[in-house]
Image (cartoon, rainbow, N blue to C red):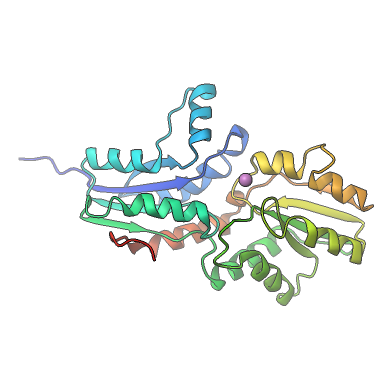
Length: 269
Ligand code: CO
């Protein structure tokens, strides 16, 4: 009798990070939450950044698949039912590239489904706002400045919506800027100049407290967020804590994986 093999797979696709210390608490924590939610599926991991995959192999002797390599391996392993969950934060350029890579495999599996990024609709932003408010209670005279990444393709105004939502919830001491693209650190500096907080808590609005958090946010260079806040006369306090460390954030990824939609071969508009 032929042995019954497990033909269901789960692929978690991340950008990747070179900061090894953050991985167990962030990327792997999200992966583990998804593995636990889908114990019947064989687990696969992919990183989209070629630079980071090479670095990991060179410096730590670890091989991680690209999206394409992982999907090829799943096909080779006899997986026919594939669930893909990206750990991207928003539907920007990186997500679009990942979606296209996955789309190319439509027809190779009897079922291919993919979940949306963490922040894909207003309800997601509301969930994140609630999680942030609980994680970062701000006393009078202190402010929370979140460092988002930014994207060349902002089809969904995540940062504006998040700030509006925090305000609506009465969490008045939070603001959001970006490390790349618009609006940059400007909204944060403007708030600091206007409200003159005694302390500004800096935290990444990023899945991992990786290179951007360590250097662009908390680095000693004069253009880091820490240095720029200090020049405004406030005391900067850096928190190297990625969003992946937040249980509510991990739960939101699981929710998105459960709501995954079939991927078909149609080209994107
Ligand atoms: Co970047």
